[in-house]
Structure formats: C-alpha cells, structure tokens
Length: 267
Ligand code: MG
Image (tube, rainbow, N blue to C red):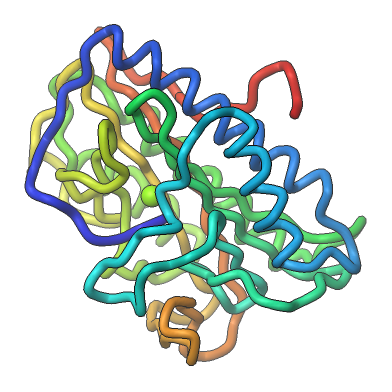
C-alpha cells in the first residue's frame, strides 16, 4: 500500500532483519498463491478471504484491516488491495468477478513477529494479455529493478527515485508524485518517502539495516487519480489501465536484498 508516512527512520537490527525475511517470504508466497488462483470467475472477495486465511494460518497480522489514514474512509477493513484495470492503488475488494484479460494489481502488507513487509504484483488474467498492458507491467517491473539496483549504502533516496522515474518516463509514462514508496520496519509506513521520480543526489543517505518498500506504478495515459465512491480505491482519471509493482528491500553492506520474493515452498 502506498501512502501516509509517520516521522521516523528505523534502522533494523540483524535479528529484526532475520524476522523481516520470514515476513517478506510470507507476503511473496501469499501473492504468488493468489495470482495462481486468479482466473475468470474469481471474485475479489474470494481473493481477500484467501489472503485472510493465509495470514491467520501463518500467525501473522494484516497491516490493512485497521488502517485508517487521513486520505481514506478508514478503517480499510480488508486484508488485500485489489485493483482491476483502471484501479491502481488502495483498491477495496468488492463483489466483482474477474474476466479474461483483466489487468489485476494485488497489494499486501502483513506483520509477523513485529516486523512488516509490503509488496504488490500486477498481472493479466487468462492466457493472453493486451500487448499494451503487458508492456506497461514490464516497464513497471524494470523501473522497480532499476530502483533496487541503485540501492546501496551511501546512495541517496533521490538516486532511487531518479532510477525509477528514468525508466518510467523513457517508456512513455508520466509519473504521479502523490503516492510512492516508503520506509518500513516495525510499522508499515515510515519515513523516508520514496517518490517515483526525483532529482538524484538528494535526500536521506541509505544505511545498512534500512528497509524500504519501493513501488513504481503508472497509468497508461495520465498521471491523475480519482477516488472511487468507496472512499478508498484510486482509479485513473481517464479510465485507462494501470500497473503497480512493489518489493520490500533491505539495505545491506554492499547493496540491497529483496525481502518479498516468494519462497521455494508455495502455500
Ligand atoms: Mg507500500
């Protein structure tokens, strides 16, 4: 989930990072499982219920259920953000069945043993996606990879933002700066904010033990959002489709470690 930041920059201990790996693998596994189960006829409320079951079975806690920031009609009350086609951020699960060709974004954050992790995936339901949808997802994935590649001790937040924004703009997308990535650790949303475009060489200097959720997202032909009648779901202002990819990373001695990859064992 993208959003509001509390004023705190947390450097995690090695013990906390070990727990963060378990939290991150759980998030990655749940998202991979939900993607595998998503097909024509799958209801967004089913996806939310499956996420709830997997979070509970792992002994983890949803970061979303009680989430009530100033911009939402909180509390969120669901375990998973589900965005379909023009819905890109904070999508509130509702009674909607997926159809082949839908561009789906699932965003999940949980806390396990006191450490949070946050990730998002975008994919097309069914066998074949529209080429422009697949290209948008691929560009967003490349932007995330560029941001991760720029993350190392001594680099500044602006360097990551610049790396992400350079890929997105080169691919032809205009970048919204209202919502972006964030620090994460004992809570889901912390400082520093990580915009998806900025000048390099500025901002907080990265240190080992800092965890960040990097989350490039774009809309096909606009950078303007509108809020759905549900008070949460953010959609493209033009009705165009959108994509959102997110990983939680930890700054290491040399670079960055991706915490939210699925483990070898699928749920
Ligand atoms: Mg996030």
